[in-house]
Figure: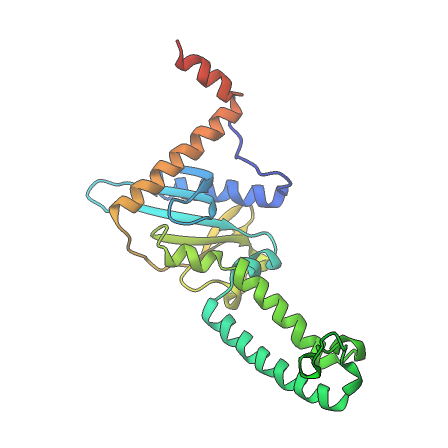
Length: 240
């Protein structure tokens, strides 16, 4: 029986193909323990593919592969916290200045929702000021990225692996869009080519063992699905 690459609900064929190619590439480069959808031990994230390599007289190596089939998907996870926070601070200063001037020029925007006039709020949306709306839109987008889009940065900061790779179609590769320190594998003619080498990140031997354990657990879950082994069956056999 062939064991399929594990899939998530609503996963596209394109994303599944990239995961399969990442598993093939990892094994072709000496990673003998690999699995898809691996829950990482040091953070709340799950890797599309994780791999472990052990060679005689060499340090063990762990790698994480994140597959991205579209630029919006890539950008959602590629938020650099420091730069984003600084941009948010700049936008908030701009918003304060705009609101100060709008209060002066449009006193009728006061809503009268407080007992004291100095605490009244203002309905700035009522005039449709384009600059003000643009500041609000960008601020909201950056806040969403900051609080939900720092996956790449967190994986590297927590040293969840020694090497990190982005896997994506060749036509999507843009150097400026790639996360710092990550390698890039681009899909060309049904195979992956290394477009950019990753930076090496040291971590403790115990961290590499923990990731190997998570790879083994993910692999076991995938085989259970492939062979239709259920928890009830496992529990029943444990009583024998």
